[in-house]
Amino acid sequence: MIFKPRRQRMLALLLVLGLVMAACASEGGDTSTTVGGGTDTTTGGSTDTTAAGGEEPAGEGDLLVWASRDYYIPPDQFASFTEETGVNVTFDIQANDDMLQQMLRMRDAGQPLPDILGAEDSFLIETFYDAGLIESHDDIAAQWEEEDPEQYGLLLPLVWEETALDDGTKTGMSVTANFDILYYNSAWFEEAGVTVPFDSLDAVLEGMRAMKASRPDGIPLTVQARAGDGVTTLKTVLAASGTPFEGPIPDLTSEGGIYTINWFLQAAAEELLPPEAIAWGEDEARGAFISGDAGLILDGFTTAGDFNDVGDFTYPDVWNLTPVPVAEGGVALNAARTWAVLAGSENPDAAALILRYIADTENLVAAAGNGSVPMRQTEAINDPRLQEIWPFFTEEVKEAYLNSTPTPVGENAGEVEAVLEQMFGEIVVGTEKTAEELAAEYQPQLDETAP
Image 1 (cartoon, rainbow, N blue to C red):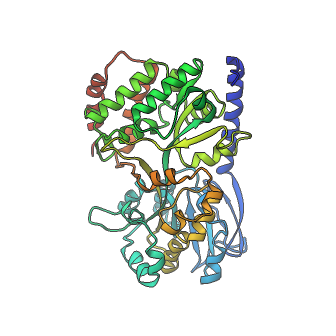
Image 2 (cartoon, one colour):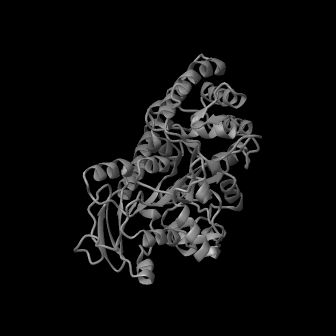
Image 3 (cartoon, helix red, strand yellow):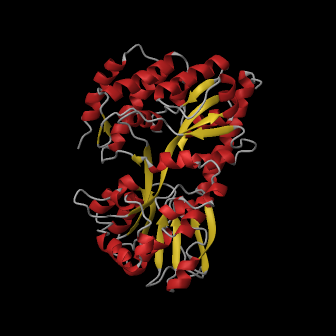
């Protein structure tokens, strides 16, 4: 590949970032959809919905769904549900990721709440439950198993275990989950003689060194290290290395913790990570990969579809993907989305049927074509149509997904993230501290976040 001068590379990066941000902006924009035989005009982040027919608000017996993203809504937009049950369904896309806060405000103001919570981050579900917004789903699951044992039997155990309380009480259905994977530049790997799958995290580091030797001006691994934007890459490697977690708190002083810190210290010292990433968020990190300036990025599975939608940036000629290698005692992480019936619904029986509608094989596969994530339902995950929708969802990738475990979470997850961001930023820009010194400095700060 011919390298662009730095100015040209930056212009290319800015262009790519514009495309990525435009795509993100469109995700939360206005949408006009047909719902339950009528028209529903929704605006991302608003609570202004119309019932079937587009003129009156949802009436008694009708259902209102709040969903975090439009691509989690089955493409028929509840039309088949209405046809079978006679219940009209409207939905509102709440892309600002503040459904919990909105619902609490609405309840305090005496306003009616939606009937169904759609595709919310699973780690927040216990908070919804503690706030009284969600009640036990044990009866919902039991009735489902009794009335439709065939469909119920297709669900993987994690569908209910993901958000179960300590006493086993079910609080929602986590039927889909995103998971982290390594994306790589196909031509760069070929030039550098890097082969996949990686058999260890050490092999990933060696591959990055080979990439740097092949393209000295390139970035072997692009990351985001801007405060407030998360540290997915760090947490994924911590989990893969076998680092123990207490809730969301990793034990940095453990063998896996010291290994992970050393791994990133070596990468930073050898310029395998970009020091300018201290100012990079998700868009900048992805932009560096799309522009060809970076050869590796660790990102969620949903990004694969986004990558393939960018001009000539096609799979597998330009980019490919491979699972994150997991050490003995380590795990691969996933992040599930949960559907739940909200407390106080005027039509709880019909609302419970929405969960079955969402978990239907046809609806799960159709939603995958819209940009949804892999499912925890055996018939759908093995449906041959997924190979047309996701040609990159290979058997190897599917196995990695099915073997992944939920991301460690807790009510202190945000505070933990802030501490890890500070440490990761220090590593990325360069530090003389050893792994042991960093662990000794930041572990007490992490422990202080424990509830």
